[in-house]
Amino acid sequence: MKVIISGYGKMGHMVQKALERRGIELALATEDVCSVDLELAKECVCIDFTTPDAFRANYPFLAKAFKAVVVGTTGWGDISSDVYAAFQNAGTPMIWASNFSIGVNALFAAVRRACEVLHGQGYTPSIEEIHHIHKLDAPSGTAKSLAGVVTDSLGVEPQISSIREGEVPGIHTVEFLSGVDKLTFTHEAFSREGFAEGAVAAALLTEGLNGVHEFSELIL
Image 1 (tube, helix red, strand yellow):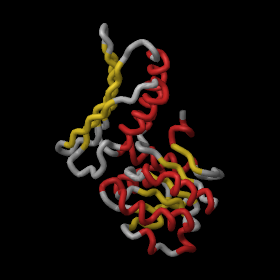
Image 2 (tube, helix red, strand yellow):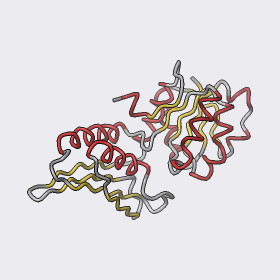
Image 3 (spheres, helix red, strand yellow):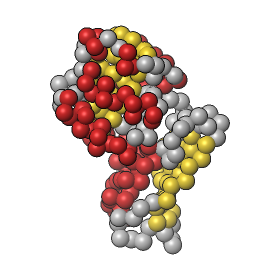
Image 4 (cartoon, rainbow, N blue to C red):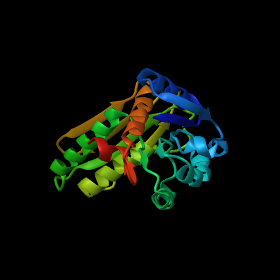
């Protein structure tokens, strides 16, 4: 497998290190993915960690040009149906996640199970997410995904609070409060390395895959 990284900021550099640790070839890292040679693109899986605006502009090219695409960029949920259609029509497999951390995906599973137990028992859910000051979207994609899990499984839409401070990689807390007790789930990332490792693991899963998939569907 060969990989092209779209977006060569902090996450792009961490993805590069994750590829090196696994002995996977990095064909190119670029800030202008639409300029990639088409013959090279067809041989490569693209791992995208750009910005919401960049992904919105680039996704038609990603769908048509690459062997497969892994999307770690968030902030495009409002056009998700258009994005999915572009990849499905092009026959290009895509794996996306609001968070590629294995620990966060375990959090999704734990919260879903808790909601099943708490359903109808009078618990009020809430979500808090804390990230570094450079993060462009708020609430975070992970918080929105957690909110979706809670709404679908508990039948109550949680309130989300977003905090931006320092260089915090990411802390997500889901709380269930009743008149008699409180249940809290928290995931804290110590660095962005877990996101990079998960994205590379997703790239390996694209071999022989068809269609559009959320990362959690493939590992849980």
